Amino acid sequence: MLLKNKLSTFVIPPAPPTHTPPHTATTPQQYVSILSCSDLSMKLGAIMCVCHEVDSTDSVPIKRNMGGDNVKSDTPTEDGAAPPVIVYERVRLKRNVGLISGTSMIVGTIIGSGIFISPKGVLQETGSVGLSLIVWATAGILSLFGSLAYAEIGTLIPKSGGEYPYLLEALGPIVAYMYSWTKIIVLGPSMVAIICLTFAEYLVTFFEYCGSPAPPLKLVTAVVIVAICIINCYDTGLAARVQVVFTFAKLVALGLIVVVGIMRMAQGHVKELNTGFTGTTTSASAIALSFYDALWAYDGWNNLNYLTEELKKPNVNLPRANIFGVLLVTVLYVLVNMSYLTVLSASELLESDAVAVTWGERMFGAAGIIMPIFVMLSTFGAANGSLYAGGRTVYAAAREGHLPEVLSYVHCKRYTPLPSILFTTVLALLMIIPLDVGALIDFFSFAAWLFYALTIVCLFVLRWTMKDAHRPIKVPIVLPIIFLLCSIYLVVAPIIEDPRLEFLYAFLFMVGGLVLYFPLVVFKWHKGCFDPVTLFCQLFMEVVPSPYVPDE
Image 1 (cartoon, one colour):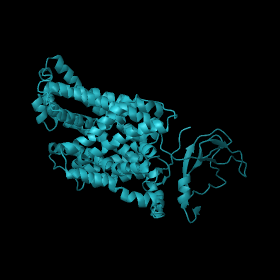
Image 2: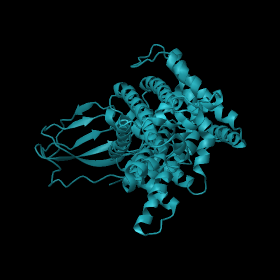
Image 3: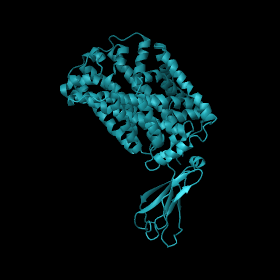
Image 4: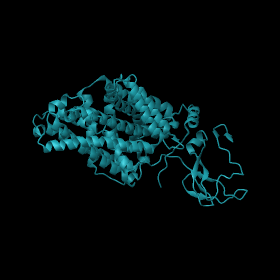
């Protein structure tokens, strides 16, 4: 049967013949899940029908209304058989992320390639081993302050999208739009692109061992991006499990480095560590820059806030995962840097282009090839986590009308935000073609910390505007204040230290998003223009709207 009117066109499966009833009371039955929502019905009137298999021993079918309540239907069919079981279900992202996978999301995204390749910026700026280790530990504690503040806001406003819903609620739509514009167009896709590019750089080095010419670097990068996209589009649960596996792999790698370091220290190889604070810089700006390098190494501590709607028991697991994840990374970063210095001298560490590889060659000889493999595993996991989280900002912004609505739709069978993931993937692929992605991220780094600072401001605003709201976690006010001051410094430091015209271009790009905001979001001059695209995407991708529904 074809249901067609001026708003929608969808194929609804015909009813089975009367002589072959679709089910009995004691055998597996077929039911039809009618997936719809108010936003879509206003624009397209779309209803998507999907068949599922269920088991039932109840002769009375059950109907679930759009609010999730169960309603029994005792109306029999004409032949006396039990009627079909019809379940009305609101499509939403499934809560597939638990405490372990949530902690893996944080740890796996923070630990990318930096600690393996180039952890030398902190040592170079501080001038001494002792102060560099203090900076690494202190930066971890500061990141913990930020993650605790985010846990308070994330449990107060349990929406996916990271900073976006917090800025929207506390500071208004214009600030939220500027954030989504910068995050979605530049920061998110470029981070995925550069991590996958690092993976490709290590992968192509193995082709010389096989006697084959290395494939084009950017082609390998594109293949990796597409592979991660397929994983995230297929199943969010699969993407979460992939994150756990690759996080475990990088923890094994870092654990190996730590264990060897402890053994070396027990054997007395502590010459570099015994230098302590010898050579410590007296420049306050140099010490400040060392914190800048260290805090960037912890970037990713906020990634679980992008997935709040997919997190099981968010009021409990969000703060726990934030605390466990950041503390684990802090301990590992300090111990790994100590281990490096039990094998390499400070000068050798500063001269190495890939510290972990040099360390592995020194310790294991030819078997040191395992270190590049571990770097590849680490970068793949970090890229998966970045795409997983990055697509949720697109999803959240589109749901609020700041992007085309179809980008907030969810696959009706797999419950994955398919359009938003594909959109982020396409932008990441475009990033690797003509651009120096690393330089792009450097120029927009101040923007990331600007929005971190504004999010902490949201915490103060919400404590005033929602003072009576239930807060599962409420952090001491001094912690977000300290983190706010650090964020302000990280906004200003790169501009003062090395003022370049590119920073002005980055700022103009952020503000330039308002050129689209007023005509498209405020005045809605596009009204109706995206309807054909929305309808095509629904039919082609099998996606439906997914409005935010608070948990009861």
